[in-house]
Image (tube, rainbow over all chains, first blue to last red):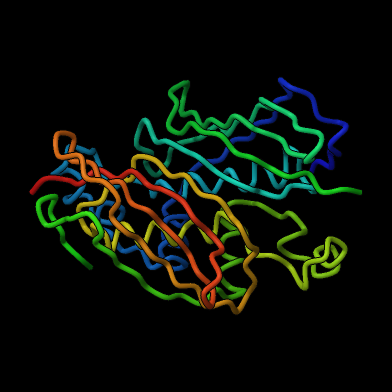
Length: 138
Length: 138
């Protein structure tokens, strides 16, 4: 885990990690949320809408931004204030995702970090967005 | 599960459900994402920042929007295009949350629904935001 303080941060700073999506992750997400939508469970349903198989929950993919910010950038002192994400491409079980954050703005008076976030699968962007983060003191 | 088609939807339409956050949900979220940030595990760490106890992951709270849209509004035909959320108040284990969506706009030419979303705890808003959803045909 990283322990960046506000003063350690600079515009352009970047952190990333990789994660492979598993069927177990989908099962856990479904157990927690109760989202039993067939697009995420039923290959035949998904194929009727021209997907090759069932699709990973967009908000499961989004959940990896919790790790990006809470473990990597800024790490321990992270406090998420807001999240904006779009999903340009679907994600499937077995996909290896590269989760990337880049510091876009720093607002010292409110100890706020604006982070540009992207999730890539073999060079194709599957999620893009912006997060506003507070950086705890100490 | 609801099965609303695009033509069934109208501005002002509202759906809601309740869920109580458990420690097991936090453990599952942590196992899936790898977010081991101490704000979400360590009461002493959280108390040093004036929280009464460890805080629920903001993106776990956000995950209930998957259920709101994929099960309730519009339900089966839901395709999440974008999510914007803010977290005005922290959430704690044991909190009973009311997850509410209200149709704000309908764009027939692109079969898009703009949903205003809110998550309330005993009348206090802990999450507010906007989601853009596609509504699948059929």
